[in-house]
Image 1: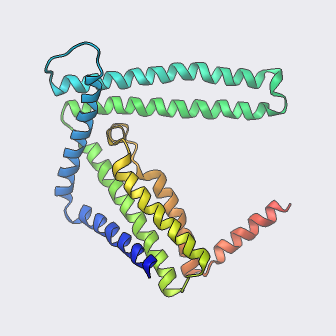
Image 2 (image 1 turned 135 degrees about the vertical axis):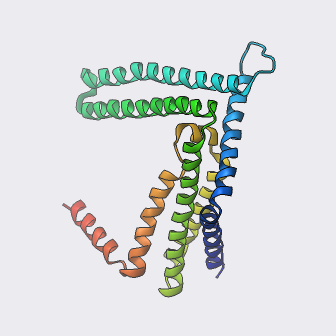
Image 3 (image 1 turned 90 degrees about the vertical axis):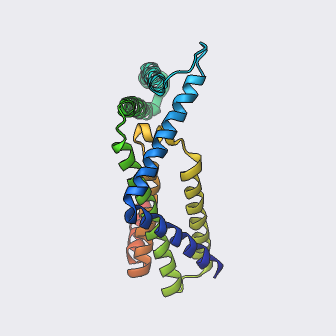
Length: 250
């Protein structure tokens, strides 16, 4: 019963989060707009404070430009690192020392190149997004934040509902499922806390790199798993497990 109570509490909170974003969109958007402004201006103030040259009282616009310059330099540094790291890995792949691991190092160079290019591109997106703040246009960030909140709440609603359904309607309370439920409920609570308090919202806003994407993918996987257990009696999961077992056995 304690587990059901905790899951029910999480479900209620998630439902309320989603309901608020749909029932009071104007108020939510206004608060998100203010939040976006404050977070980006705070990041700009930190960059301004790091300057070695003593500055007097300057406008918010100048501080945001300083942040834009910092992002631009970070992107250039990352590009320079990529131009050093990727050729070095490729050189290892072409050398005689790689032996049977040559294909691995070629793949490693490709993945490293893609990752660093993507990160540099994100930084440049953030640099260009600052232009919107300079001319007081926040719609893209606000819509991104609003969508992120809804995704985060909706995946939690679906997964927690299915988990409760398994307990209530299927009496799925053996020790394995109980342990799994406790772990997943704890993960959901930890993710919710980290979503709100542990991420750099200024960078998320500027990079348009919304926090719920990876979390959403993981929870969709669990939702499909629970759906199979609840409505299809685990037949799909069993079929996939049998296929994997047969493939591994040769």
